[in-house]
Image 1 (cartoon, one colour):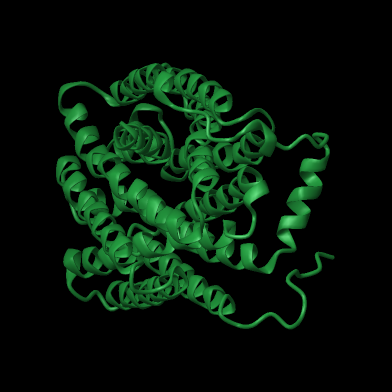
Image 2: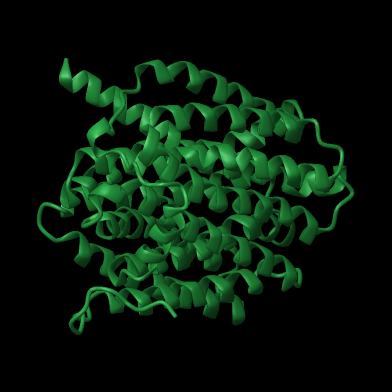
Length: 401
């Protein structure tokens, strides 16, 4: 019976963690058609993605501390309702500005899933177990981004881009019903009873923690590169390489399959190696694949395959970087797991705000802007990760001026 409850818990948490993926990946094949329908420029339609990341990153700064005070279930329920309202508003939008507003509301609700799923795992498990469970969650939730672009492309065949957002509204309603099976993981004795204004002091305190900051920044650079890929490939594949929206879904799905395989490998290797070593290995492969992507695009090597293959290895490193970096960052913060998880999420997804905007601003009709941004993000992630293995001088914190 306990095993059945644990399985049910993991499935619900996986669904909550997938909110970010389904909110972004499902509508990717529709970006070119949305650009024409809403009479927007390419940079303008890509700003709907940046708007989502604004709400997603800023919302996490609220949900984590709030859940540390009232528990995990109530914030999750409120977040799902906001997600449903935002999704319905997107479906009814007539202009790109309306879309951006509803995307922010949708994102504020969506971010409650990933941040509190991570915190709920930390409520129950230690570092190595947390890394193992987080890898399991990411492996299970990998189905959502794998099916997202495929399903989005099929919806475009029989309906329109509005149907994609109506489907998200239905998904939110179903998940709200499933919350009846989600247990509360934060015991009352472990809840934070400090004043609300203390939250900002806690964030400043966490930003002085070198261990958390290094892991957070390494993950943030990975996410910046990943969101560059997500925003740019619909135009690079569909418009530059003339891939159909349905074919784009398959090319996108290859990367998710790689992420799932890497997460499965991470779970297996955690029995032999520490999460820190696997994290470093992931950052190294990330940087190398980013460099190969830059060279292939700059010198026009391999055509479509020259872009797809290095991106596959780049995105697959999600399986070694995300779970291990989160576990490492939260290892020594059991009583601030919600707040720390919020800060991590804000830095991870917030990094995509700038990269998603930059790839639109520097777009020249080729994949070059995507390639050099992903390459630089991969190198930056590796450089920051190297700091995690440099011994601290004497103190465990950096002074924030």
